[in-house]
Image (cartoon, rainbow, N blue to C red):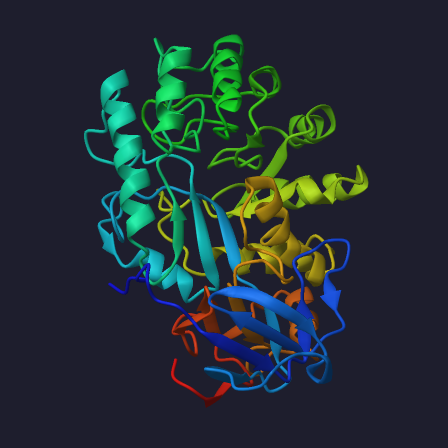
Length: 399
């Protein structure tokens, strides 16, 4: 399994001849630029080639008029250890998802560990172990933000302080453990927030043994930072209740692949109607009973654009800049100072779409020609997407 070494640096990377530059920013989703310059994994310039310092690159990439976009962010995954999921007994799912354009994943809890400890000492130990392990190991180069404890009855404020002091920054889905009442969850979510730990709440019917229904009233009372899988994982609340959550809460609206597709579209459309599309983020909620979806984020983008009638360039922002800003990540946007995490795409061969965005609006996923993480090429033509019509070419240097 490929691993990004901490000491590995990209040097100077020049990416030129970009035909379509998606920014990840809802306010300016398409940039009038054809060149990006990277130094040691950080974007240093975005603009026209004549205005950028492109001299003496260590790596020069000709995009051949195709699309450059921020690497996709999967806001909701359930890793365990390394690139293996015991629930599906599948190896290599993270690296395979990187071939679907995902460069960052965020754990919603390491719940699929057989014999997962539910005592307070054990759950803290598991979270700290997962955080440490994925901080040191990147399958396929993917940045996996893990170590998301599932809260249980009996936890105190001191437990959250200890978790934060140890480097834990996430809570697993509230409701997957014994804490299911809104008032009790609200208290623990507030403790987590006090110490800089971001929370996500399970929404909808039970997903695994031990979980249960989390209805709209519990979600509103708990007031977690992210309304996890608002379209259900798997079973959704009613469309009316989902729209009520969008209206009455100001928190993140997370839409996932492993949920109700009809309600996914309704939630995204309602967020736009409420003039808060910046709250919408995307995840897969895998690995789960539905399996692993290496192209899950791309499929969600195509679904929301085609059936939801949302411009494709905006939906790409749901999976990049929106998530980065909500999750406080230094990626997801193509602008100086951000991590050089990119996906290079073009319309799939033989799509009916005139160009990449048109093909997505028609419901087709794009073809990926290259994925870059921290300025390092992690794959060339994707083995999982349909073949891209054109792919980037390395003009000089070594990938």
